[in-house]
Image (cartoon, rainbow, N blue to C red; front, side, top):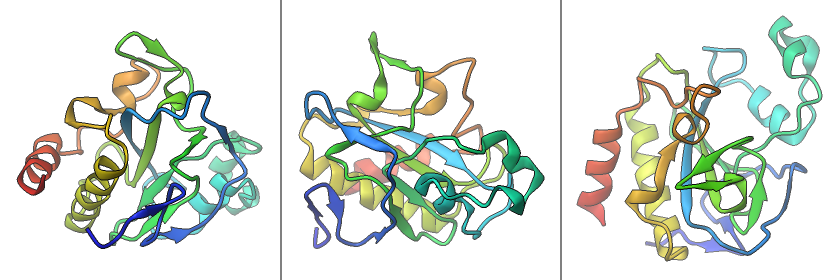
Length: 184
């Protein structure tokens, strides 16, 4: 794989550093969490996700942004509809993506997971370019972090049930995991 991580930063991603992170408490990376996001909801290709994760969202750009004004959140990666990969936080650090969460009896999933946002909604199908980039990114992460494997890939809905629904019914888990197995 010619694109690698260096100090937790993906060399093929557009870097957009976020202030919303802190050191991992134990340097462990053992899970991937798949999310979705669009700002405003259902609108794509706009700069607002970068603004949110960088702490400089133009809250007057849309009335719905009043609800998220001042929110301190981030993810490690965003995969845009055209397949562009954006990175906000080093994989070696803890991004603030999962919130109150639990996986395999462990709370505080931000401590040990990498958060990958897919530009989308629970109901809009994701694009071919997004699935291709997600598979490639996952393979790079598997190569870098030996505790990662398919059994430790979950949706936000799985670690925060009742609170979160993403990546939603529109995310094709079988397509993703089958493509990942074929390339592993």
